[in-house]
Image (cartoon, rainbow, N blue to C red):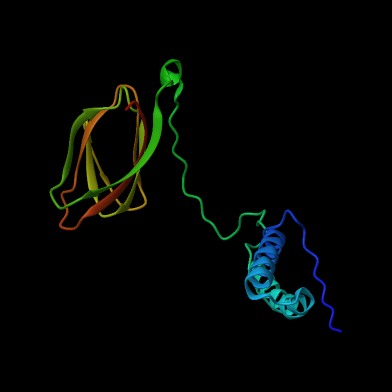
Length: 173
């Protein structure tokens, strides 16, 4: 006589699949094919064990344990913007991040940040930021600006290649 045994937690997906599959196959074969239950189980259990082994080996390819320390990462100069001027008006605001691609000659026209604080990071290309009293040429890796109350400006790509700017802002939709 051949005997086989398997043990699975009923709450585990593998245990549930085992129980469900066993019951369905047993019922189908016994009732529809008039197969002797003892013979059926002797053939069925080894096949189920093979399937269970397959599932178990697949679940062994899991996510690694979390890495707790940071290493091999360079953190650039920190730019920050005090959000206190908007603290009384935070309800309904959203934090968003966008990628702006300035084609050569592209412009983000004159606008104010009195109601929309933001910070921007230039990934590629060169941009010129104009504010009252002058302008600043920005290069890749520069934080183009942190803009808040009393900041009105416009930004232009005067170069021959596209510029990519990442902008994070807090706005009211």
